[in-house]
Length: 431
Image 1 (spheres, rainbow, N blue to C red):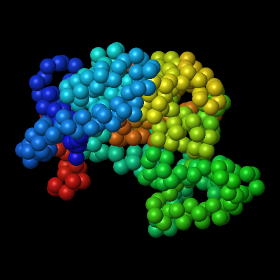
Image 2 (image 1 turned 90 degrees about the vertical axis):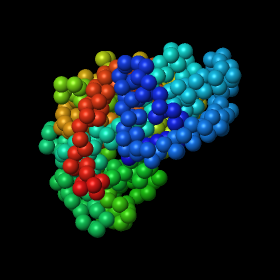
Image 3 (image 1 turned 30 degrees about the vertical axis):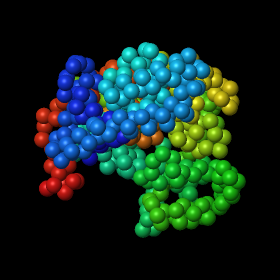
Image 4 (image 1 turned 90 degrees about the horizontal axis):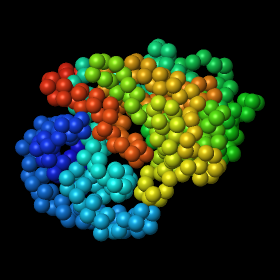
């Protein structure tokens, strides 16, 4: 379902777009989201919207006080912008553009150049659970299931010659096991990465180093023989399907940024107006926790923007709610240079993502996690419900400006004019 986010989104989000005061791609996206929500829920949500139109100022006051009390003084110290002005700016962009006080700080909208582009910021819920679902509902043969199933994803990548992480084994809750690649013995003789088949966010992941003598060691120093590790994985699979992959190593030029994890990029690709595929944005993720095994934002990660033409990195930051206005030109632990560094094999990486999207031609947008390894770029996974927060945190221009927004607006406008697909009706029990 499309989400009606309250209180972080003011209810006016569902009203302003119908004024059609602009003609930009972001205006078209905001309008499409509002129209989609009204079409889905109809008059049933009208009392709720009216109620929150009156209650929203109090909800805004609470959120503004919460985030300004935590972050406002640090922003004032770094920028000279006083608390009164911060509150006034938060009120205006919340009222007019439905940007919450938290996102005011995450996107650093206290910067004049960013504040001036406030109308072009795309809310997370406009894509995730919103317009992504609109587009999904018009597809007759969706590949969503393949992208969400890491085993099926590996098979599709092999079919189309897309470089990805070698996936050896899937162990299911019923105790059955499927070998996707051949290997001798209980487990492959290499470093292993074990994770849930349908997991996300790095939860439930383990990394095991191959010792060369039939045993494996994890980051806590636990030592297991191959048969014992296989049994451990099987025990974990009683609650959820598990998969065993090779734990790949980062490119040698990136190891001073990787800590103990495989660093990766989140890259956005979009289907254009003529059916081709373009890679529009990228951020580079790195960990700041020596004990971490993934580079996710919420696992102690930092991100920096990547220049799409050159592969050059900008300064890195966390999500913005922990340390506002703090940007790292060097890695905070290793002191390795971040800003200005050119990612190796960048043009090959961009081309790999473009070819990967072509293997899923029904998708309008995909958020790809891509690692640049010691064997070249490799796709880790594709996210069908990818948002833009990392992009809009690290880039000076919001996602509503540029080719991503232009192509996306083209497709959502076309989707609003088409009927719901039979595949969607069956999925939702409507047929």
